[in-house]
Image (cartoon, rainbow, N blue to C red; front, side):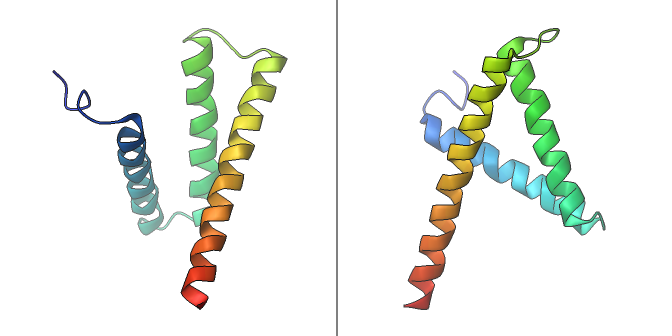
Length: 92
């Protein structure tokens, strides 16, 4: 049994997300501009998404790119709402 067998998908997602953020912050702390770190992280996500959906030698169809783009947009909108709600709560 792996250590992920008893965790929910949400818990695994949060743990992975935090590891990526920690790595990005480590790279930033090495002196790399935060915008470059962000761009590299986004590019890595695009490459890995292509691999996850298309395989090692595959690529995404135009429809696949549209679906992934829509998923990124929904996630970014969700994050922005969470951030806005956090700022609003802190202001009260």
